[in-house]
Image (cartoon, rainbow, N blue to C red; front, side, top):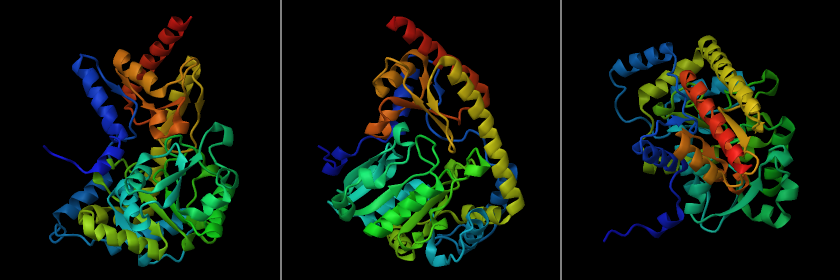
Length: 400
């Protein structure tokens, strides 16, 4: 008999693995499956970026083990990008580490920072990877409620008492917020940095959606735009969503040199780095400011067009939603009379073949909501929205 480690009993199946399994089961019954769940860009990276990758792949010497910490050419490009995009200056190589996407980095950072029974503060709802891995390591969560009633920005001094603040080693910050897509104000993020400095807490900022935003006056900032952040924080950036390359698995961290060193130490023991041609490609992309920034502008326009279309359809359905300031998601209230997100999304899948994400999968405060992804292909969006409208109308009629 095979006996797996007991710790796996505390580890739930990954959300999107569960959704994929449920969708496969529905498809086996003959349903056509339409997905508006996972945030996986449906368009390819631009041709000019793929051409650069092809050039780097063909170069001799680029196929050996990469550095565990990353390629210095990419770090130099990151330093330039952080200055150009956020006005962050003074970064050195010691402040940067290449990651295999932000998911891997967030997961491995737990090993570097948290001991069993340590306390960590995390938003609820939130992107599940950091929280799940911290719990797996035996750490204890203090939840910060993120919901419409607090404008998706928890009051740290109200929601965390002094004892909890003193006991906490780490605070996980996620703006633009996943799953709701909300952007924090600059004033709020400054207060987060001040709170961490006051209580000797390490900040972990997940900034994966920094380049998909919908208002130039409300661009998501970096924590390092605020005084003191370099003394206590590390920030995760990802190329996956911004450049339509989730399968490439490449991102980077910026932050306090000691925290970055801790992450690099863990990574040197568990992975062998990111394929050099991918790192070298992204170095060239970031340094090509004109084409890079033009693509990001065009990509935002593409998603904004989809966002407007989906929001208009939700208005017609009478669905309450919270328009995102960034990301590729729309956070929606369950229709009137619905109280169980998993049950609602399960019926929607099994009866209509439409996949959306149940809010409760992201935390207790996600109950009462569902999430729609903008990464549904253009030719499928109308079909998906039609299925959702039919289901909501049918459920409303049945409730009368």
